[in-house]
Length: 124
Image (cartoon, rainbow, N blue to C red; front, side, top):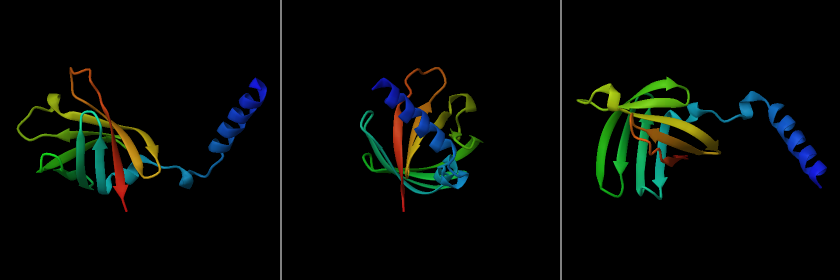
C-alpha cells in the first residue's frame, strides 16, 4: 500500500511539472479586476476593485470605502501605502496560495506577529 501511494505521489508531481506554463495560475491575475474579500476571523467582507497600483476597498460590514495605493514588491507581494503614515508601518501582503479564481493572502505589519490568511475571489 505504501509503495503505490508513493508511486502515485511521484507520478502526480512529475505530471504537474510537465504542464505547459500557460496552464499555471499566476499572481498577476490578481493585479487587476474586481474581487470579493472574505474572512471568518477576523470577520471581514469587502469588495476590492483593483487597477494596477490603485485599489478601492468597500468594507461591506462597516459600510466604508477607501482608496489605497499599492507598491508591488514582486509578482506575488505588495505593500499597501497609507498616506500620512511612515512606510515602516504599511501593511505588506503576500499571495501564499492560488486555487482557481481564489487567492489566499497573508497580511503583515512590522513588529506584529499575528498574520491572518484572507481569501480574495476574482469576480468574472
